[in-house]
Image (cartoon, rainbow, N blue to C red; front, side):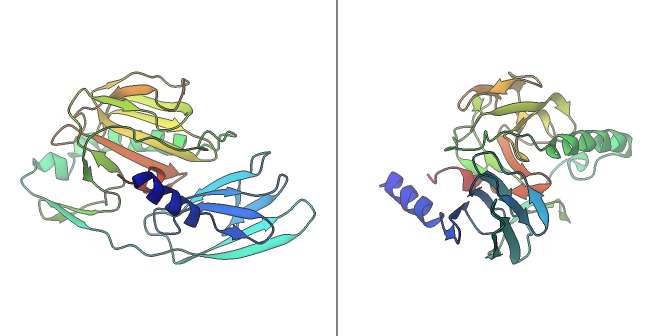
Length: 267
């Protein structure tokens, strides 16, 4: 029954545009959209050029707070232009209050601010890549087992202070349980001690789509490794600024934060 429900959802998420263009995904804030057009076409989203593979595949996403509309424009090889205004549904995010945290979990000390800035810049650089590969195609796997303990977009209030939203999907698996790659890709960041996220791996799946795996106890890959769907890349842990073992899994399309829950079948 679960498989049938997912099949029906997937069918609904494949609206065809004029000219044989297909889009798959959730047209909502945090949604990842995979597109298919004719080879040789040029595609833009709100005036931004998208990479299109030789077989006509492309991808884009709507950030957490994306506006209500986006304009997709496609110029086919014969000069025909198709334009579509995409309606982006607004989401209401939950509020997560966490009290009793050590002060340095809420406001980092001044002594580490330069380190945080340096690490953030390194992450931004790998997320700016536009790899000419379509490793993102196909069905994705859950990267870890365990109940979901944190959801995308929730507004966090720590010790009564409003902080950045949560941009990942948390799996509360036991420490030492495996973390796997949900899709093929290339490892572009592999660090053992980032201030906020501890043992961290980022995988590039092509066309600006990256996934991040945070707070692990161990990583099993290095920068430059090609990983296959289902390959073990690390172990769940509690490194960085966390209160207990879990995997924080994140997805970006360039600098746009996307909801990982939309890339895997519902439980």
